[in-house]
Length: 179
Image (cartoon, rainbow, N blue to C red; front, top):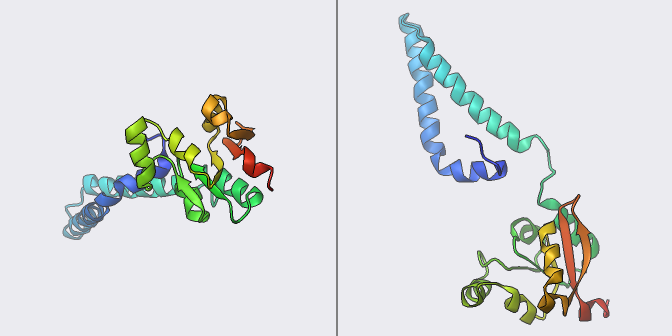
């Protein structure tokens, strides 16, 4: 019941939701019937309360930070600093791709060309280096290390390395001189 990436828990548990709803309803009905017949038992009531508390607790965990989200710093930076006609690539593009239409996924989950490159080379480096329309690489701070790889460093400059915000951005050199 302990899960490090809590924001994914609801996604993985979603297929169980119809069954959990039926279970919750059955427990409530059994408790109601037991209370009506005078054969009240704390076991069904306790089980119902535990299920309800678990559901409410997991929902509260999702919504406690309001609209802030640990992936949103990349979206905010792109919205503030990247021209509307520029293409941005990232290994994890879920949130960024939702809010920015010119986003290229590098991990191959939604980009068949990147997946083919990863299968062929074991990495996506050659793929995004050859994609000349990619002007920025923006993602969590871990991609800052990419700027040390000679093939990437030959084409991209590290322009943001912010561990506190968990953000790193690389910009293609020839595009930087045109802006």
